[in-house]
Image 1: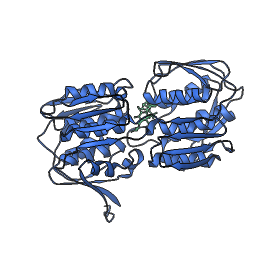
Image 2: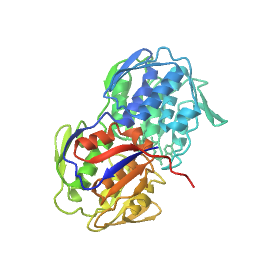
Image 3: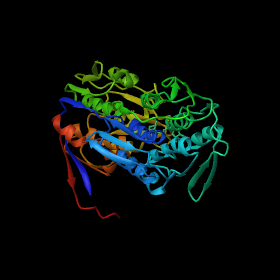
Image 4: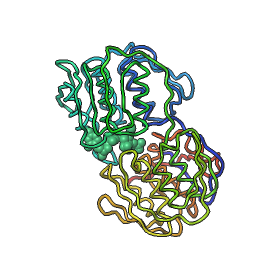
Length: 425
Ligand code: EPZ
């Protein structure tokens, strides 16, 4: 199996440019279903989740052509199926993002119920409730969701119990072809939602208010293909910013909008990092100690749950104690037990992690619990005493393109190594 080996004591320095956002690109790809013809997406990250979404679209009958390293040409005029198979949905929960577009275009869809994942149950009850309000009928059988629209899709007001990113996206994509106006109240406000709304409007949709808690969509009769550049990945950027803050030397992170990480950068400055912001980059460094600061994850513009693991790795080496509260997912503290193997002092109590800063990490064999936890373990290895070996790195490959290459280019001693599969007891 492949692992990532990190030699501690080689701090990052220099600059890195992040790719397009994973959590936008996947939904933009699904949205191409709405506009029969050839849509071109640029700044698409070359990551395994994008490859899986490409397989989903091909399974439906679309043609997906890689035009350049970060450019996809997607022809959805040939789509002749509206069912996504379990083996693809099980691989990547975001495959459920085709539900809204398939309903809008065909009036029906069969999507495998997404299984849970390491970080939580990942239900889609809010997606279903909201779509039912638009006139969708659901039947779940043999693990598949069978959705139909007996009387078509009709606009209405949907108020979400929680500002769910996925539910907001599916409702936006279903309602662009509904009769009348749909209002999504308590909508997610993430920059990736705005990026999707921009694509839909470029396709001829009428979406207003994306980025605010109330999004209004006026249904239209048809949408046309377009060309769109994926917004920069604020979480990939935040990951490198956290790494730079941990190592201390100046690092410039390019290719994203620092305003998309507002609270993260503010908290990091409170923790003792120096952050100089520019239009689409920022430069990070640290000279003094890392200060302990309480963190609680919330939907945007709150502190993003996708930055929780990386921030835990920073706070684990702070000069005090603090509490991290995870409000978005029910099981997203698995990193803690791996960091403890490296010497961290973290106690989990429900959805709180009590973190007591320690002087340093010692290198160890650790396992990626999920995408962001895996990145955080590599991050901890950068400053650990000795060598850290991170396994289950397929999690990392889901969302970080050229992770090892980017770190090596900034001076880290990190490499991907093939090791014999350990005998699993
Ligand atoms: C998206 O997941 C992201 N994934 C996640 O990023 C991110 O952590 C999350 O939004 C929150 O920002 C993609 O965009 C592919 P939610 P999503 O719907 O849409 C519960 C990463 O590391 N919920 O906002 O699934 C749900 O279980 C990944 O890049 C319901 O209960 O997030 C979760 O606890 C991880 N019922 C919470 O709400 C529903 O119908 C937030 O989910 C929908 C969600």
